[in-house]
Length: 368
Image 1 (spheres, rainbow, N blue to C red):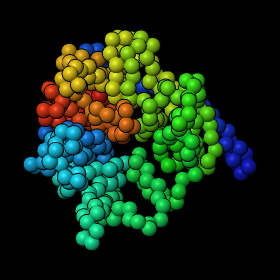
Image 2 (spheres, rainbow, N blue to C red; image 1 turned 180 degrees about the vertical axis):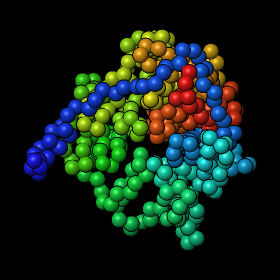
Image 3 (cartoon, one colour; image 1 turned 135 degrees about the horizontal axis):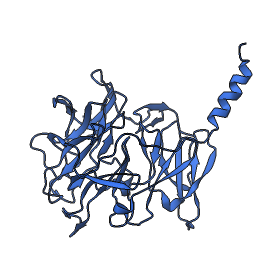
């Protein structure tokens, strides 16, 4: 007998209201440090910026890189000769299977998602001299040239996680709060009230696209920002995890469920994590204990780690990722492949401001 349509709707609504399944890892966990080879693109990237690196698919990595002759340090803090506009840089695609490098030309990567890429550059307007942005965007290999925002353009919502543009202004607003952008389809997270005291037991509030507000089961100090982990379908809500035997990493499911992933005491009792990401094999954490103004990493402990079920192994030493991501809610300089098996990351060996930074890759699913 055919199920009546109204029952199908009820079943659908009931399924949507079910709490999210607990996050689970899979696959064998390595039993020793440095269990996997580290592949290197050999393409140099800027030191003092939030380098964007993303996966196009499970083999190809796209990232912002330096053009030949461009300085490693470009912000005015380190380079007094820096111009009013940023150095153009270039966008590079690295096939991690064949090691082929493809130069897409001048620009900076904005985002990449499910084969869609978007990168941009600036040129001075001939009449005003003001910088204007231009984009190339579309499915990889079929990108089209488009102008960036111009005065008088209708409002758009730009989704930094999925690369999509949505018409109109968002209704997911909370002007009295400091907010963090989620996918456009999800809205924003409101963390703390502006210019007011914020008791530590105040909850984080999820503001949905329809304007509705949902208090979450978490206090605002637990959250630093929001980083979408596409293969897992959850948001990682902080990067900096302070040293503590009871340290946890909070993640948010699209239904509003907050899950707290425990970190192994062997790691968290002695180290802090500056970056965090989720892979199929476990939680990726980075540490770079430093001294003298964060210039000199501690080789004995700095690097990238993999953690799960109370176990932890070291994957690589030295500096990993973008050093301001945990504070500025910017790109981590570390990306997980669509299948959750591989990580691509910015890496350097030695003193932060003098070392050569490149993009590297580790396949965590090849077996320990």
